[in-house]
Image (cartoon, rainbow, N blue to C red; front, top):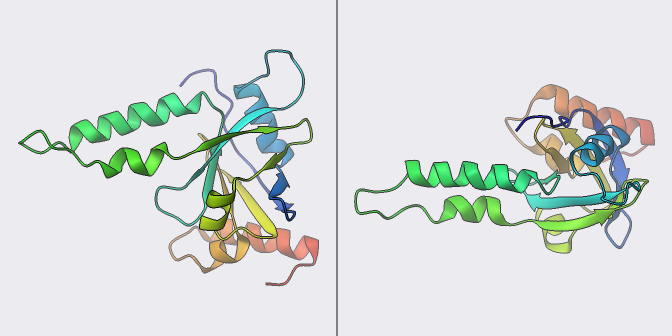
Length: 166
């Protein structure tokens, strides 16, 4: 995709009992640039989905759905058996997502099932991954094997800054 602002940066948010959290400013500004509101006001919509592999969420602007669908179509075509049968799970892994509004301060409500799936309760750690950003429960992130040390260090940093011990 061209002319897109990439999602870079990290941040930390407190999640209230209704699942509301504020998207960090660096990620929110990219989100607003990629999906500006037609009326020119702050805020917009964000798609929240479960990650294909890890116990976290991914979030992206609504236009990125078309990219995910093209990628899934290509993977499906590459994994078609000789009899024409393909792996139905390819699209199942990427098609689940819910579009939710966010306000000018970046506050949005993390949908119930995805939040529960990712173990996100009171704290959310955000990590930009160019095309989208991930939302993690910090403890789940730190305990997950194979993730970059710098990502875990950033989560620990934000916890320390907030005075939160896991």
